[in-house]
Amino acid sequence: MSMINVKKRTHYSDEITPDMDGKKVSLVGWVHEIRDLGGIVFLLLRDREGIIQVTAPSKKVDKELMDKMRKSGKESVIFVEGTVKESSKAPNNVEIIPTNFEIINKSKQPLPLDTTGKVKAELDTRLDARFLDLRKLNVNAIFKIRNKMLNSVRKFFEENGFIEINTPKLVASATEGGTALFPVTYFEREAFLGQSPQLYKQMMMAAGFEKVYEIGPIFRAEEHDTLRHLNEAISIDIEVSFANHEDVMKILENLIVRVIEDLNKSCKKELKILNKKLEVPETPFERITYDEVIEIVNSKGVVLEYGEDLSRAAEKALGEEMDNYYFIIDWPTSIKPFYVMPNEKNPEKCYAFDLMYKDLEISSGAMRIHDHDLLVKRIKEQDLNPESFKYYLDAFKYGMPPHAGWGLGAERFMMALTGVKNIRETILFPRDRRRLTP
Image (cartoon, rainbow, N blue to C red; front, side, top):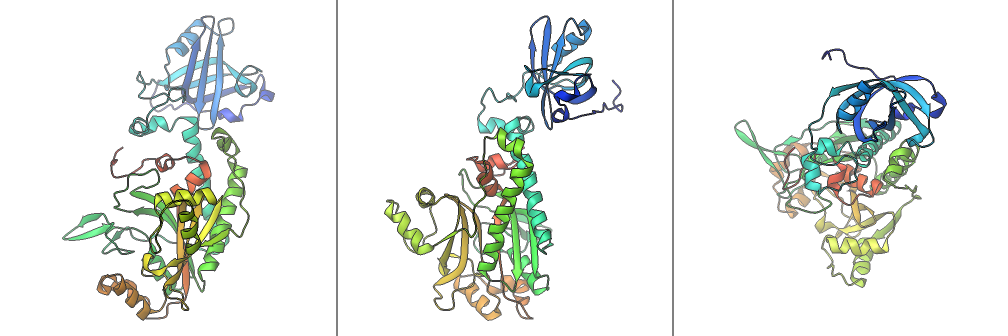
């Protein structure tokens, strides 16, 4: 076959229906499975949109073509030309009787893993051969849902007057304090991979953009090795001027509802493959205070002292009590970042919130400090050097409006949407403390 004469399809597999009986079609895709019964060969062709059966009975198909089908091998790339036939025994009640069959690119055998899903493989094996793993229908479905989720998010923001921004991922200092930074060599000096677009999106409030969003990578050099942590992830971030924490919480819960409504319309097939039903949550989401969380968790026999962040055991205990999406509010100021606005009546508490899905934190946000001097005071209180934040702090000297915002973890949101238990299932090529390839 000529390398430049690429075979063209007339239809995807899901476009072929029983009412097309007798119609000539062309398909391209991969060999999903082959069954050779001697006088008849069944081959399942898989493309991006699904699977269709190619049926070659010896009475209707010549021997040369049948031999090509037999020799093609699982996961080889093929071209099939043939006639549509209605068949109650075939998947989706339709099959193709081939008149032409070509092997475009033969797959090496044996395969590193089974793409039908009938033979289970360990996650490490799957991730090592991720390009093959992604061919599995259930794995593929996760990323089609992810695509539609991000599409829905962008539409929501655009319809609500947000401006998309792209902030630097190479930074000179910590964006949120702490030491969880990946250092990189930047010519003659040291730089870091950004933990968050936090400081830059706040600077956009000083620029007068008023409502901004960013969907981009974040990097955390945390030595976690859990089912819900990654060292490189995608964060969906917003910042809004002339708004408080309640205002952006409403935006967040409305976004969650919008995404779920959109997925129920556009991802019926993928949700069915995953056996997942998405219920549209009612708004406003339930809100519980940090103090109430302490009571709930301790009542279940898990020790959580005031001023501690939620441990995994505490999250599990809380998830047994709470259902669906809910906010945790009124956090202690001491355990939240320096830029979070303290409650003016009770400075030990602050206007921060976390959005939880059962026992999973998927978002955190807050009203921010917009007063320069208070911000410097908070930076010092957290044993950080204001000089390291000079360019950020300059933005607060020349008219910074009140503002609030949040960050939503795309992969954690996908865990909530798809029901998968390991966050590595929701990202194409996960990066954790043990994996830097492929």
